[in-house]
Image 1 (cartoon, rainbow, N blue to C red):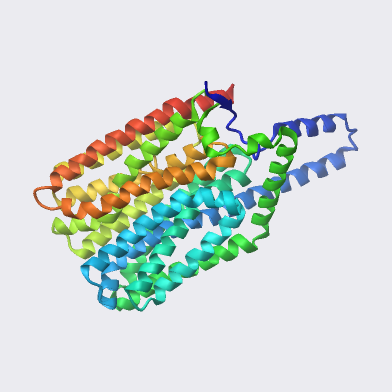
Image 2 (image 1 turned 180 degrees about the vertical axis):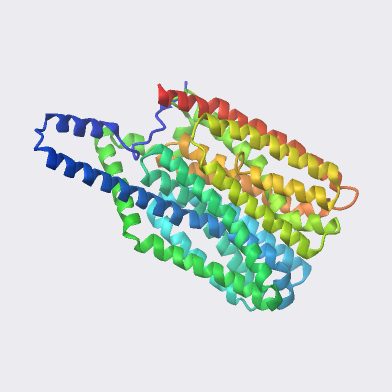
Length: 469
């Protein structure tokens, strides 16, 4: 029988301390209205300071997502310029793209394990330092070897940062609703990271090869600013200290055994709130994210190729990409404003259906207009039934002690099939095969909705009912 484990990890807020404080407060003698009013003002000021600190942490963590998507789109939007400027052949161009995809998968897969060894907050800083150095190497690269090295190292670094930054939010923010909001913000910044390289590449395109270096130079500067922000902001440091104190306090009262549980121990146990085995929830989230990521990776990497193959000009394809990226950001903002609960579940079903419809439109259309409509529809609704859901579900489902590891495994598992798909898709998106390939993605969209629906029905709704009860 599965051992039942409370998903509310010892690192999270322990209500017994609040109960103790409440009892002490009830026994204390009031010292007058002035003191009470002063205490109320201090409490309000503390709450305001905490809210600001949490928002700062969420944005600093979300910049890692910005750098992740920004690196992918910066390379795809400037690859032709690198080919011309460095004299790359077709094999080298394909190798650079494949290196980034596989490096991203490796980093995502290993992020949680590295955080377990080095510590969560230490990894939170080191990975962005490595990312900044790697992007700087890309910016000044004089040949294929340095470009490949830089892009591979950058892929590993941003891959590591994705699960780590999400787990830092879970670790440092004790309030569950605020955590969910901040995790949603990281996805908005991921969408912004898709938009910015598109716009920047369009602006610097008249500069030729220099424009490619400028795009990566801007990303390098953003990475350096992220390092300084994460290291030097005293509000972030305070949240790290308070989270560590909560962890130590819980460990001293609950014992070390629970906090020392590894990922395998958790997967062999069940969530006390729902009775569901963690292994079942892990499999459902992972399968959902694999299917969804296959769709998203195909659209993000090959939408320009598809549009151009359907007789769109390069400028028209870039404009479609920019509009779609703007819609993606707006969709993320809209989703983040929806309260957690039944409305988000309803939005999931709407988003899953809209993405299936987008894949059908793309498969039956066969023209630039149909493809453009499908891309825009997908990019807006992917926020309602996509990566943001997988991230939130993982952070809500698993104990904080293993949340980074769980996030890493799910992200890594999903990106490895995408890496292989990137190698074979160009040979499938040709006349005679493209229709079959696009209809296969309709099936992928259906499976994504099925597995995501399993998570909603088996996990999210029961957890919400347990919390309310």
